[in-house]
Length: 186
Image 1 (cartoon, rainbow, N blue to C red):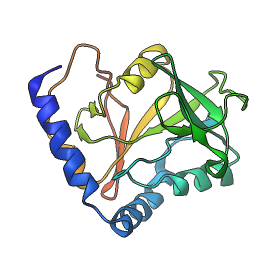
Image 2 (cartoon, helix red, strand yellow):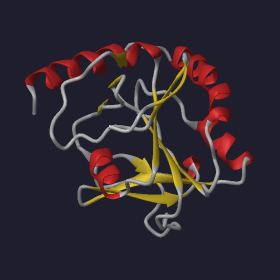
Image 3 (cartoon, rainbow, N blue to C red):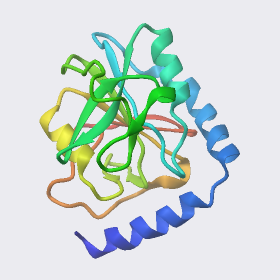
């Protein structure tokens, strides 16, 4: 890993952990109007995240997707992979890495057209994401290039550039309180 990534990861974790739930809630509400700019043509599903400390709440995206007749799937880690399963957060359980997600027997996302929303510690204007270091989203996007990927972040998390490893995969859009930015292909 690039040393600057480790330093920035620690700095951003500290910054985000100090934000109040009400600040994050307000910022998430500010992103909601921008969702209507996303082209849903041909999409049947939303792949959504269950927020960790300092991440924007995702329930407004869930409600928006359900109102539009889209199925909502959440990640569950298994053997260094992300699997997306249908479920409702009030019934989530911890997976093998301690992340909360649907139970193993839940309906599985079968690869049909989808819109993926993910959190980040930081993101650059090219769509590269600084995550928590597991590489789950990079591996997922590398094997599912047709999924339209959107980072859901605060304005303060957007940087002009981030250090990038060869395996990093850029996202296609950034959704923040400041707006929706559709990015050119890398």
